[in-house]
Length: 157
Image (cartoon, rainbow, N blue to C red; front, top):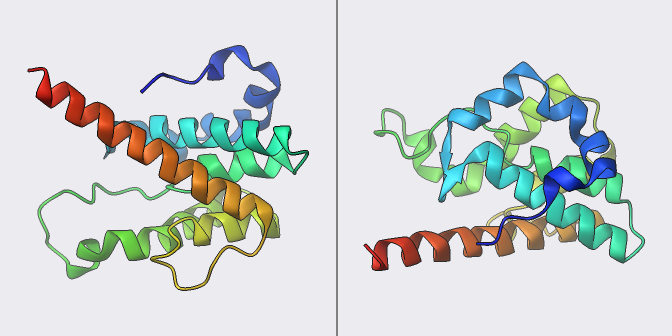
């Protein structure tokens, strides 16, 4: 997957600065997710969400923040199953991310909805606003690209 040009976009960096500097959020750098870390995956989703929202004149500030916080869970869901909770990661991690995000940051209703609903259709309730849809679709796109990259690397070994 081509890396998005996150570092060159100063406006985007200004929006997410508070979150990426947070010590608890920094822990996501050590948690594996798809082909990289939760931190990297979330940064890619945040930037794509920001770019889409900006292009369509939507609330790109909320899109960037929600995209960054959508997977703010602090456990390795691939770790050996000590607890049945982790077996349902796809269904439960959005709530965990939402709780962590609310604990560490002030969220607006669009950001909350986007974090809680980004796993639609696994979450029965669909996204309630355009920002939630943008984050949901950006997450799906980035996830598919990460899996494709991982498969491609395996194929070429």
